[in-house]
Amino acid sequence: MMRLFPHFLAIFWFLLVPVSHTVAGDEADLYWPQWRGPLGTGVAPYGTPPIEWSETKNIRWVTPLPGSGHSTPITWDNRIFVTTSVPFGDSVEPVYNRAPGAHDNYPVSQGHEFVVLAISRDDGEILWQRTVRKEFPHEGGHYTGSLASNSPVTDGEHLYAFFGSRGLFCLDMEGNPIWEKDLGRMQTLHAHGEGSSPVLHGDKLIINWDHEGDSFLVALNKHTGKQIWKVPRDEITSWSTPLIVEHAGKPQVIVSATMRVRGYDLATGTLIWECGGLTSNVVSSPVAADGMVYVASSYGKQAMLAIRLEGAKGDITGTGQVAWTLKKHTPYVPSPLLYENRLYFLRHLQGILTCLNAKTGEKLYGPHRLEGMYDVFSSPVAAAGRVYITDQNGTTLVIKHGDVPEILARNHLNDSFSASPAVAGNDLYLRGSSLYCISED
Image 1 (tube, rainbow, N blue to C red):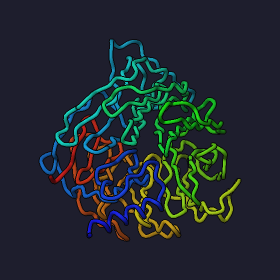
Image 2 (cartoon, helix red, strand yellow):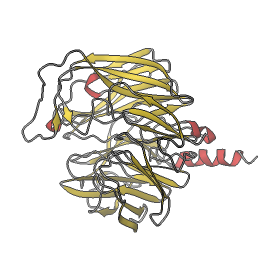
Image 3 (tube, rainbow, N blue to C red):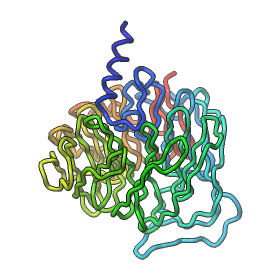
Image 4 (cartoon, one colour):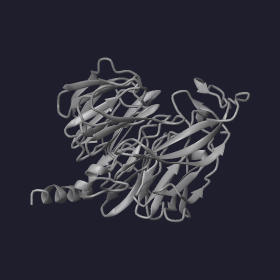
């Protein structure tokens, strides 16, 4: 009988929170089906990963990965899925495709294989490796990015791997191709690269395609890849991933970008509401719960908005639908973490943490400098009353979930991490040049 209560509680919880693909009950221990986890908030509701680890402690296995990529690993049952790009052929004269004002870009000098991997959760063995496309990319990217930054998503029946300009690929769980879709070629701002990930809800697969050309949001039938609807967007390049929220019995797609944050009817693509107030170069993705949506940016200037979905229609900029705003210490690349009624976020790319009461915007603590944390590109995750923050230098801080920033552990691995962590059961997965399974088992 004791196991029935957490199972019922999980079902009730999943009815309240926004989820692109939900897993009910204790089974949530095994699943991280999209880049922000089963709740779309960065939280593993039943995960119990370790607090401490090192190269010689609480490492179940380490699997070197071919090529490179910053996409987050996802899990389903006993498998982990990872995307990567692998150079091939001789180097040629680099192609920069550098736009005016661009800086810190890397050139394209080789062809690349765009690859999907399935890895055993038990021992880290690569179970299958599927090359879905081989080509010479039409533009380079920023040195902090990669050609495999879009995270995959799965419903347990099929795996959807998105490589942006290289295409969208539906595979079965054994890596066999089902269908593929070419959505065109992105021309990203300053050739900084691509990064928005696909999301699933019911039979629909949603892709955000914001770039320096004709931007759009599209819904595809997940079984066939056929277009259900497509709506144009008055937007420049953004890198945020859409969020699907069920409100008042109807799902809507929320997309955060430079000109507007917008909510669309999932069934038809019809615009429901829009709100200005963010800045350019939007990377951070929305999070939501209890009828509230939280969006942020930090390029040029800083902004965070808390938006009430109840009554949100038309242009709500500057209205009472915006519950509160913040203009300091907001995140740039890392997305916020929404854990129970606390909103955690980092200042720009720095190890400076703030925690707010999500409903009221009241500051619980911060900006609090996390000593020894630098260049944070991955988004924080949470499990078992703890918050996990990983930087590019291989350090992960474990912080107690609460109203004061209590550091529980400082852990270091000899790798560099830009991909966001994934949590499944007792395991935490960190993806750098290798994939680490961190576990006390």
